[in-house]
Length: 249
Image (cartoon, rainbow, N blue to C red; front, top):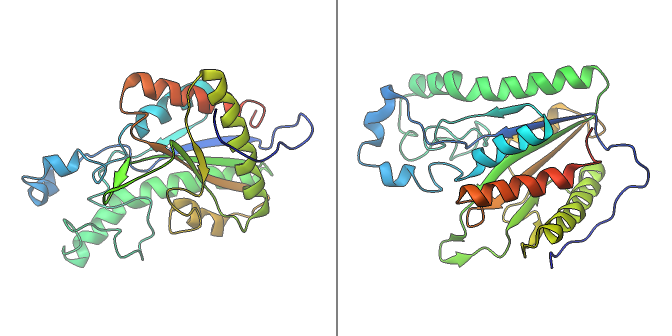
């Protein structure tokens, strides 16, 4: 039995007018001009440090199921982390933080800004039309970190100080629990786990750009143990798509 709480808003009207999906850590690609920095590091690039394993596959399937636009990046987070602000001390990894400022500026302009700018511009276009936007960032997390097992299969990250966002996260958790039960899985759901949704991230930045009445940003964190196979990726996408029915057009 899936574990969840929360309640649904009364009425049949969807919560949002538009849905947008993003995947900031969809791949572990390193451009040829920077390959020398990662020589001998293929094993690291293939781990959760190099990408969010399985996340892009789920995002693609969910986009197909919902018809929502998907903005995905396949540059490795070890080159530059698109889900961190430029002021974050680890936006550049140990492989790139030592690079000269002009090179880091180039990486930012070439790989970081385009993704963030396209997403922000898309949302701005919808908000200008007085539409309410739900942004789901699709991510994954390693089942074990520093010897500690993560005790959830799906996490929903949000800002609890934004009342609409908190209410929607509760509703989404409830709907996901129903979908998981229908599917016959025993996946545990937690809110603001394994990270705090108000911590530094792309949704955190976007919340400063758009009012709470127009923008809700939720990061979907999927345990890599459940999406390591194509079968698991399909199940996760199906559960998310079913849960979103009635919440978005």
